[in-house]
Image (spheres, rainbow, N blue to C red):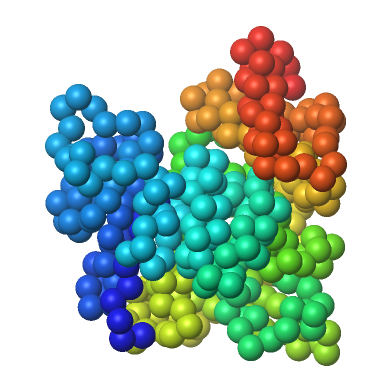
Length: 385
């Protein structure tokens, strides 16, 4: 890969966005951050602008009256991602705000490195349609999450119709060593102490409930166009094997690495090449006395089965759950509900939601909003769940 690649980093002030910029800045002869987009952290965005000198920027919350960001480089997000000088769009924002820009980028034939779960969980069909539309113009969808990057790498040179199953691994989150009875009284600070990964607060809580792993199964379904029935999840405490692919002849491929998001980010940016720069610590298997695997305890982590069930319906239920979880997690972080209430609220959603079959994007977005409103109403009224 000799030519300089221009990258638009969406969600540049978040955890994945910051790590992406670390990768980009380590190889200035390979990558250039041509555009930056953030949610509301204007101060950090200003700092990034000084460091990377982008040609375009966007702030979802809008610029403050005292901003140092010049209007000359300020541009709407959906215009940024289709710029002629953008080669790769790294979509690392959280939530659904970035979904329209992801669809626009794919339809315009851009390479999209995706680290946004909600885009596929809520808008999976729309994203797949945009990808198919944009493929004649060069569109690609490259996974950034470590589990999906692992599957993607295992599938290089393989045919999807020869896959028996995909196997995602889960660390078990912050409470993997606690009993079910102990989970009622855990605190947000305890839930934010993930044993192997450094992530933002929302995804760290979702990892503690394993809701995150259910979302990853749904992501894999849309990324690789494979039914959920062919996706399994194993608990793997060391987080060294990120995912596996079993083929119809019984062969199994696995991708291993130290838990560090910078490597899958670099792979998504450099594909189809591999670069000699090693952005993460080198894996030394001798340091691990053993690698352990077990089935997930569904009674301890009920949120996982709830998400999988919603995904199998392939209607608006998963979108409703995604919105519901956003509100439930925010309330837990604010100490307005218990950790175990999150799964109970999700159960209420899947029992109450009236799903719509064959939904379009507007239907999915409406369901996501319904999920948010439904959980907010329960919690605001102080109802027990």
